[in-house]
Image (cartoon, rainbow, N blue to C red; front, side, top):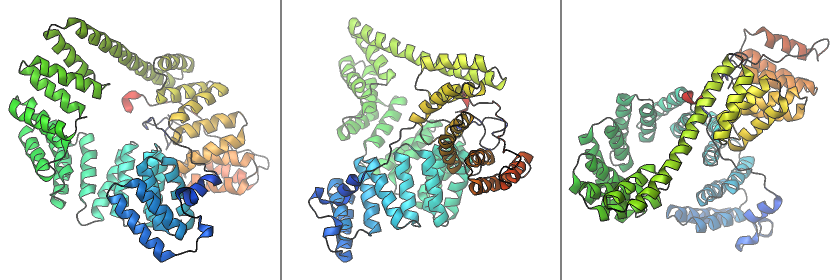
Length: 534
């Protein structure tokens, strides 16, 4: 992909994450369903406004939601809104509850309704961002969370949420800045310390990560999940005694949590402490019978004790609960073979080999994609396109290969095919700014200016600090005689990149309303990212 800061020169290593999104166009009938009589109460127009009663019913809904009675809470929030259509808290709570019920589209629609009534409410923007994240639209979520932060810049919680979203979209440096800002904005923010600890651990900065988890526990020593996460980090660096101590502390604080018992049992298994391992894993299964990992590890305990029948039962349960876990299948196959049940073992091995071949296909597809990026860097566009076709044949769902293939086609001026590939990429990652940008450029080259403008506007909204996105959008706007908007985009581009003469020339041209000139696009050059950079 091309760099978001120097698109005229190079591609960036922005990670492409496969995303799933939902459209949020609602008909008027959907809005009637939200607030009408389908749940057994009148529409707002037929009921006299009663803000006080609305407030009380909203509070009842909150209590129901706290108890996990989400469906009943939704009904209460709807009734509260029917009594007072301007009750922002009830609208917010309804949207949150609908999200908990799995109605992502409905949740987003209600958040947007609330924001039309109260557009400067940071809580609404923040909660909408979290809903967008759950809907598989992380880039839109970042943008919305930035809006929330601009309305409440002193909020440690909003800054922490922004940091987490940036971490999930691969912007680690920005994420670290926001998380450290969240820590500075509050006296002892345990969640911000923990989030920073996760980021540092992921970057292999283990010592710093441990410090942040310890800081989080100083803020909130009785939060069991923090002890559990710290235990996992200790285990990852081989400090098993400390890991066990943290898992035991987590269990002491939250004895009904199967994850903590399984973690302690698995650690005991690693240290050949069969008695502790068996006791903790059995307890994990009693709490959560569907814990495939606990069944698998308990099967391993039995296998090492020579109890093959018991081991086979546990491995079979693990295979049913973890259909994608190859280790469970192989452990079951070994146990069956040891028990003299060779035919069953062979069937499992055949299945494992088939899965292994598929995994090899995926690995080969990534290798082709990585080879193609090198070819693109050397301007060998036809050879790159051939490698990318091979990559897509082996792994049709890889969005990075789709994007790079679209780019290879664009660089060969095969515009129809390039547009097709970018469209396919957007089906799985509808808010990826780079894909919108290059699709916009391809459409612009086809003189499909209005379609191009729509994608370029989306790219500019998602990448507000990229001067070349603003320049390209300005070119599209100028072609439809939207000169004031084009000039505004070019003023932004010049502010962001004052040393680029092309941007200044384009601005002067637009201000003359294209008299004797035409604004120019920056040149595309290829240096794409590959799978190793993801």
